Length: 215
Image (tube, helix red, strand yellow):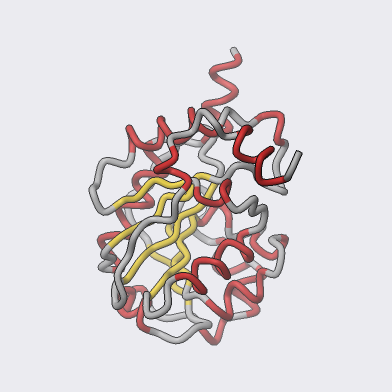
């Protein structure tokens, strides 16, 4: 059985529309918000809303990953369920819920971003992540490459407000940090460039929700 055929069978229950890369036009500013979303919750939606507003984005791609190399795959809910739950939460029409990574059998964010950039010349992309992911960002595959090729917006999360001071990313790229007041300029700045955005915070977490469901 070919790898492509095996992959198509694995995600046969997923709506094909989710397996296509969202359409975007040249010149647009687009946020890339990826994660396992296991499950998605209002805290994720709040991060997306803050990014859309503070960065002045035309779109935000809510990228539901088929798996996460740093997490236990046995804990992951089926992809189609995570997509359906994400769609219910991400109500802004500028948010495009997608799982196109599954169609390309991508495992690492660096590979995903390289594909996105190659397929969409002339589009201004920004990597979006919650501050709770900042402390471990240096464990991601080719994390420096990501920072050198994509502006990064870090959105505040409970208990992680000071992470931007102590994280490896913050220390390595301290020279590339821009003031939060200049966040709307981030999509148009040549990387490396990053900022930390404060705002309303939700105490919800996917781990806590999963533990509550088990109980």
